[in-house]
Image 1 (cartoon, rainbow, N blue to C red):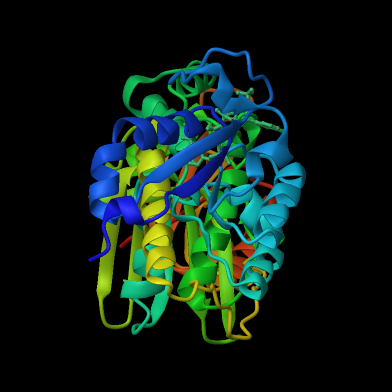
Image 2 (image 1 turned 180 degrees about the vertical axis):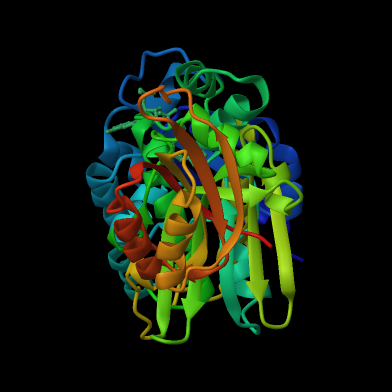
Length: 438
Ligand code: NDP
Ligand code: HSE
C-alpha cells in the first residue's frame, strides 16, 4: 500500500503574496495536515514571488520564503499559482511555467481575456493543466459547473453580477445615499477593488469575466475587445431615483447570450435596471451572482462572495487540489476546448428593454409626439412616468418623462432616440439604460 511518506511532496510556487496570495499561503501552511490527509501527498509551498521581499504582509512567513527573482521561484515547481495580476509580465511567467512542465493556477481574468487562447494552446501542447476558477466571481464555483456539470446541456444565456466593487458602490448609493467616491474608497479598503480601480468602475473587470464565462458556456473563444462595455461612472442620482420610482434597482450586469438570426453571441457589460423582485436584485454589497439559463436545466443561480482574500483563495485551492489529484493519479491534463465557430455579434443586434429619461416641454400634445417616435421605429412603450423638472422655468416649462419599453432591438432604439432628439419639444435625452428581467 502506498502511504503519504512514500509519495513525494508536490512543490507549489506562488507568484504574488498580496490580498489573495497571502491567503493561499496561509491555507497551505495552516491547513497542511488536513490537505495532506485528503490528497495522500504533501503540498509544499516553496517560494513566493513579490516585488518587495521586505514588506510586511497580511499573513507573514519567514523571510526566506519571499523572493523577487522569478527564475528562482519557478524552479522545480509542480504547480505555479499566479496571483500577482497584470498582463504582459504575467504572460511571460505563465508561459515560462508551462514550458518547463509546471501546471498553472491563476485568478487573473485580465490575462485570460487578453492572452487566454495562446495560454490554453501552450498548456495543451505541453500536456499541463491551466486552471482559473478564481478568475470569475471570486469564491463562487461557477467555471467547473459550466465546463463539467452543464456540458450535456445547451446554455442559452448568462447574466451575472461579477464585479464586487461596482455592486458595492451601486448598493451603497441605492440604500444609504452614499457618494460614489466614499463607497469606492471603502471597497478599496476592504480589498475588493483592483490595484487600478478604474478596471472595476469602467466595466473592464466584468468584461474580462464575461468573456471567460462565454468561452466555457458557448464553447467558442471570445476576447475582451468583443465585449460591449459601459461602466458605472455615469450613473447619476437621477437614474437611481427614476429607477426606484418605476420599481427597479440598478446593477452592473455582464451578459452573454446566443442569438439565432444572425447566429452568434452578444457580450455586453452595462448598468442595468432590474425589477426589485428579480433574484439578482437582492445581491447586496460585494457579493456576486451568476444567473445561467440552459435549455434543460432551465434557470440556475450561483451566489457568493465575489472577491476578497479568503473566498478567492478557496477557489484557488480547489484548482490546486484538483490538479494535484490528477497529477498523483497520472491522468491527462484537462484542456479547455473552443470547438464551435461562433462569432461575437455587434451590440446593435442585442434585444432588451430600456428606460429612457427625456426632458421635454410640458405642454399638450408633447407626450403623444414623443410616443409617436417610439411607435414609428417599432419600440413599444410599457410604462411612462412624468415628474417635475427642477430646471423648468416660467419661460420654458419642462417636465421629465421616464419611459420603460418592451423588448426591442438595440439598433431600433438608437433610431428612436435620434428621432426623439430631433423633436423641437425635446430639450435633452437625459439617460438611457437597459432593463432586464420580466
Ligand atoms: P495584490 O495587489 O494584493 O497582490 C499582488 C502581489 O503580486 C503582491 O504581493 C505583489 O508584490 C506581487 N507582484 C505584483 N506585480 C509583480 C511583479 N511584476 N513582480 C513580482 N511580484 C509582483 O493583488 P490581489 O491579491 O488582490 O490580486 C491578485 C490577482 O487575483 C489579480 O489578478 C486579481 O485580479 C485576482 N483576483 C483578486 C481578487 C480580490 O478580491 N483581490 C478576487 C479574484 C481575483 P508586493 O506585495 O511586493 O507589492
Ligand atoms: N476587483 C474585483 C471585484 C475582484 O471587485 O469583483 C474580484 O475579481
